[in-house]
Length: 197
Image (cartoon, rainbow, N blue to C red; front, side, top):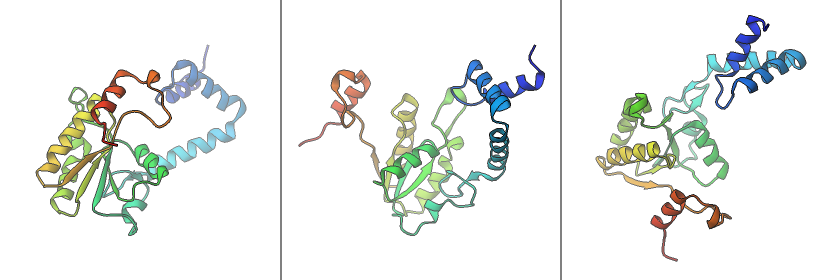
């Protein structure tokens, strides 16, 4: 019979995405049997992060400051604004080193079924930024899913009311990819977005 506290720990691990009952049990027992010190560090760091990390006042990404380092930077192009769904998307784009503008993080995508509307994504805040007429190009980098495309369309309509140029990240065949391994949706998008060479 499992102790109630161990079961509570297992259940706590299950809140993480992709962690099922067996994985959660393995993690809980690993921490308790072999790495109590690591478990304490995890507990302390998690508690500190939950208490101190909030949203950037400008772009909505996660930060422990009022305004994140990217928004505070004077080296960034303030006329280009890249719209992404999650803070992890910002990290991926930043690692590429290709974009030098600013970001706006939606923290999700439109999903009426889940009750996620424009205000939940901060689109009212985006509208205020667009109304200031400082943004000349809005780069939409939402995921190529049904929800991501619906979100992109909504943002495009919003930006059009302010006369802002809207661009979308190109999608299609990945560098080094082989056609036989592509799904039909990716291949369709590659044909639609083809360009003259």
